[in-house]
Length: 229
Image (cartoon, rainbow, N blue to C red; front, side, top):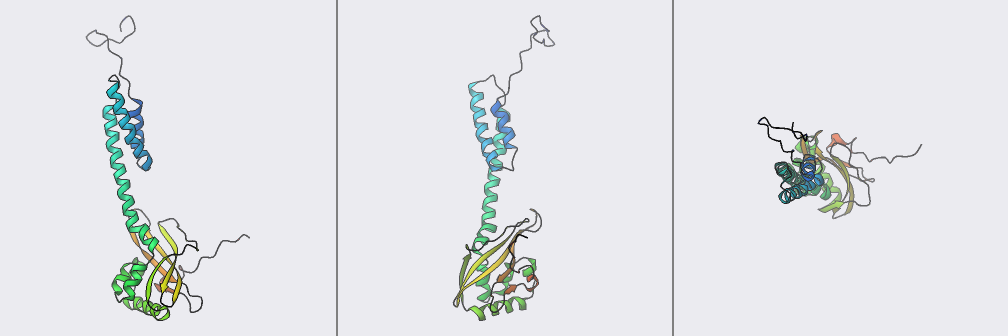
């Protein structure tokens, strides 16, 4: 060690002090690896750009490689979030907003297979006769089907497990009919995508509810509002 306290190299020369890291590059890396939050991914990329600009202006700072790694991670994470959002909107959000309209329209037009394919294994695994009987009864009671949408006057639910019990209004030639359907996104985990209807219940207080599949009749019973004791 030199007289002034500066460390000496093996050859006896003074060792220059270590160059400090850019704080922006450190923050960028910390934010970029927090991939579960899309906002952090975007901030990680912005902080990485700020770090690269700072290091270019102040060459005594280190962290350019760290900033580039943070930038790459942030870009990949952001792209993943965008693709995931598009995937979710296409296969989950859009069907839940529209309701089982496509399945009903196909089934009531005679395409029983398309109707059954819109349901999870609980509905899709039922017999063709059961599906045909349900559709025939719907047609007999309510006439021609013209469409449907979310019932904004009723409250649905989104319980854990990626399932949504949603109220709808279905339009028939005889008039509007209330209905509920349970949409399943994932079968117990994120690694088991389902994206199908579990059951459909057409609510008819006068003639009795129509539920498909029949095995879901208990699960499809109208929810009882919580009451205070």
